[in-house]
Length: 439
Picture 1 (cartoon, rainbow, N blue to C red):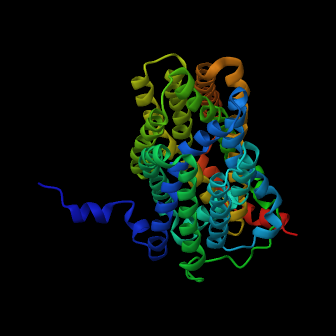
Picture 2 (cartoon, rainbow, N blue to C red):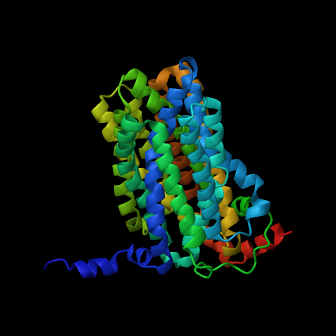
Picture 3 (cartoon, rainbow, N blue to C red):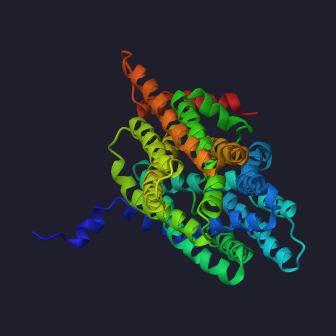
């Protein structure tokens, strides 16, 4: 008996997402912006290598990569007073508009010959000030327009769009770098963010995303939710350590390619493209994990990811390292999507933007902190040594988390992570918590 394509389409977990009238308007803007970001992955570090003094390239590459995301954490903490009442679509739109303006200034200044490494790093930092709120807006929108059963698929669609971009973006960036330089890539990236800004600020009807009536929570409400729900605080701690230890890869990998291998930007693009191919496959598979236990799955992902990064730091042949990096990419979307889904389900609706912004702030902070550490690590251990330490550290964090899970599993009357998170909300604890943090 043959397969019926129409039946497969109707049963697909993606169907409610791509068929939703609001999301259908937004996904093209996401795709364009994600493509620009996929190109910028190569261009940000490569332009820093060109602008920085040769003696300090490691430090400046780390500073550029970190500044592209670090100020988003500061924005999440300092701008809550002004942004916590904003609609979810507006948060995404204004984040995209700021990125378009700041990134667009880089190629303009470069064309006039007045762009130094200090100004470059400053503009990258400005571009990301609203990024935690933009990410919170995206996933708040997903949680509010889709029923809970479709949250995992909705998050996976966004992750999949980004993953496809990491496959297509680096090769395109390489071509643009050859013919126009890395500043040209950032000009294209700025244009894609302008498309995203217009999509969210103009194309989304005002009544398309339901907003809760009670939005009087304080600036620290999101952190209060995370603190009161043990599953979320533990998950955020695991994510912080995971991303912190992955941060040095953003510094060590470009320098490993350019210095240790003596290769071109095309080889660096090959690593990122392999990671993106794996990530696309991971995004496609993620919705089918909805019946798996989330905590054991996330911990297993962390352990596997660390093991797959290790070949880059033990002198493996380039082809082997590229394949392993691609396999690590397979694990990235499931971790990100599953952890975001847990936050969406556990946080009360009125506090969802604040909770997601707080979570994003901690996660956004962890990668640039790790990236900033990458400069000194590369200086002390070399690019290969830094990559080895990153992979081993990630694997060790996963093993520690697995040990914690095993200890908790031995206790009587335990509950699963999802049940524990839901029990707070269903018993009214989350609502009471919302009253406590209001001002």
